[in-house]
Image 1 (cartoon, rainbow, N blue to C red):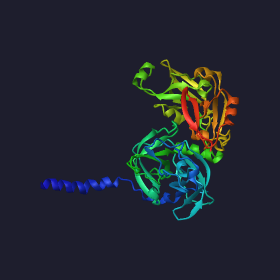
Image 2 (cartoon, rainbow, N blue to C red):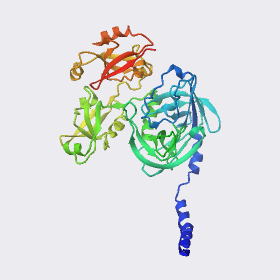
Image 3 (cartoon, rainbow, N blue to C red):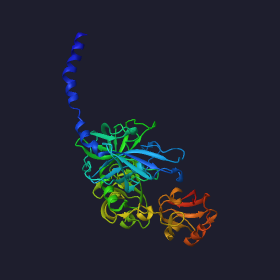
Length: 454
C-alpha cells in the first residue's frame, strides 16, 4: 500500500509537470489576434416580406447555422455572428448566412467602436461574405498557406458564442476534406473538421493555427441540441483566398464547371472497372455540350486525377474543379475500360452562378430566362416540348419554387408548354398571389411544384 502511494507521488512529481509543459500556450496568440476579430449584428427590418426558406449554402437540418432564424415571421429580425479583418483598410470576412438578407449590418470592434458595414459581395455556395467599413489602420490577420494542415495539430477559434464577446476555445484538427453537400446537393467546400468548442455566435469567426495564421472560417456545427458536441466545421483557407479575390474584383464568384454527375467507387465497382483499389470519381452521366463532353469524357470513366491533384473520393473532384477559373485548361487522368488515359479539359463557368445578371433578378415575371430545348434533350428525355431554364434570378419566384439551370418546364397551371412562344403566352395569364402548379423535368425525371408571383 505504501509503495503504491509512493509511486503515485513519484509520478505526479516527475511526469505530470513534463506532460503539462508540452501543452501549447495560447495566450500570446489570442492577445495578438483578438483585436482583428469583430462582432457582427445583422438586422432585417421586415422579414415578413420574405418567405422563410433554407439558404443556398445551408447543409441538412442537423448541421445548424450558428444563429437562429425565427420560426414565425416578425417585424424585425436580428442575427449575431463573428468576422475578422483581412486587411487594415476595413475588409471583413464572415459567413454569408450571418448577414443573410440584412438591411443593416453593424460591426463592433474589441475596443467598443461600432461601424455600419456595406456588403462587397457574397457567395452562398461557399457560405462566405466580404464586408467593408470606412476606416484605416485597423488590426488584421494573416492567412496561412493553403495545404499545410495536418490532422492532430492544435487550432484556436476566437468569436462571440451566444453573444459573449471575444471568447477563445481550442482543440485539434479532427479531419480535413470533409464533404458536406448543401440542401441543393452542391459540394464545393472541403471542410476542416475540428473538436473546438463552437457555438451560436462563432459563425464567421477565424480558426488559427499555432503560428497565429488563419487556416479557416468557422461555418457550421454538427448538433442535436443547438450547442457544441465537439464536431465543428470550418471553410479552409484555400477556398477563402479564391473567393475573397473574386468578391473584391467582381462582387460574385464564378466557379469552374465540368457538367458531370459523379459517384464514389466501391470495391465491386473498382474490380469491374479494372481499378487496383476503390478510388476516384465515377462519371455517371455527362451533360450534352458540357466541358466534359467536349473533352471526350464519357459515362463509365473514372477520374483519378484532375489538374495535378489526386481524386480519392468522388467529392474531391468538385472541390478541385470549383477552384479553377472558367476558361482555364486542366489536365485530367481517367481510367476507361481498365486503361489509363490523359485528357485536357477546358473548364467552363457554372451556369446560373452568382453573376450580376442573376443577382439583379433579370428575366421574366418568374425571374427566369428560358430557351427552346435541343432535339437531343427532347429525344433523350422523351419530351414533346418544353423550355429549358438558362438563368434563375436570386430571390425570384422561380428560385423559391426550387427551379435550377437545366430544368425543362413542361407545364404551368393547366397549360402544357410546348416552346418559348407558348411559355410567354401562358405567363401573361398567370395570376399574382395564387400558387400555380408547375411541372418540370430535372435530369430526365418529372417533378411537380407550385410557383407564385407575389
